Length: 86
Image (cartoon, rainbow, N blue to C red; front, side, top):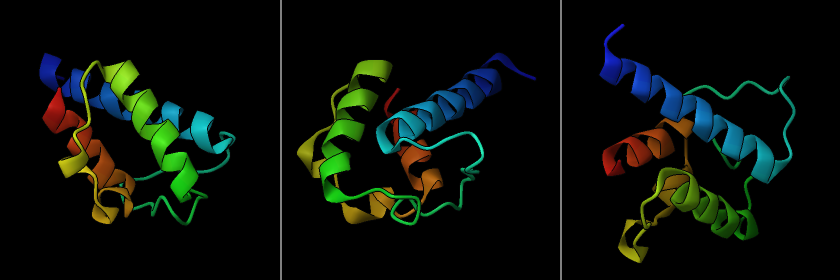
């Protein structure tokens, strides 16, 4: 596996961990790229905490213009967003 691919994979693992923490999910819940974040418990109040944790963990600022409902429709969409920012 190439170094960039390994880094991309680590981003997904770390992002899944952040989601598990914010949503209090245990390891038995599978989070695939198709997983709808609202279906696994994301609600509007969690969005602020989720974005704050992402900013802190990946060391970038999420601009208000970047935030839309589509960003949270799937884990894949959020993962692509984060990978595009780092």
